[in-house]
Image (tube, rainbow, N blue to C red):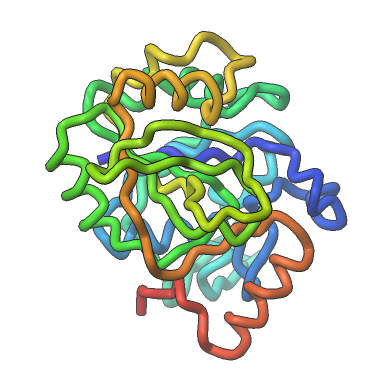
Length: 258
């Protein structure tokens, strides 16, 4: 099963670092947050990735082009025709497609642009700036159980994001702005989707979180998988510092791999 990761945004609220690199390449524990997300998926056996690049796409491409150099000891022998020897190579079981989906393309447009890479099977979708300990096997099992087009992961609304209203049967009835008295849930990403959802996306200017998800909800084709565990978006420098603190203390809740 393919996993699509949205990694093309500007990251303006963490511009101290995103000025120099794409937001998904900002490091937690000396590794890009994108790497942390991929390790999470890989732990559950999801190793086929489609990364929707945009802003400074070349940095993401160059990182994966030389990934084995980042993760291995290497000897360069310039006296022997520039021979390169890789030592203790740490290989990942990943297949990574890097698609340049345009610097100014919106989230929905990025998904539509990789339609040919996705194919005709169920796929996963997430954002390149959030980590969690969500059980992806349970999430997929839930999606298959209800037979709808789309499932998103819902978490407690502790931050200023749009609210989703969830019915008793886990279907989503509405999207709205958060109010001061709210104790509701938000879309944390970690979605499972049928390829038919791409038909709900009009063009590059379509924001996935608006018309497509709203229309799926109206047609009762959108369900919520409620996650009670850890989730954290790296939206600001303060968020990054919090994630760094977890990692440095050896207490990163999203690090479920060995």
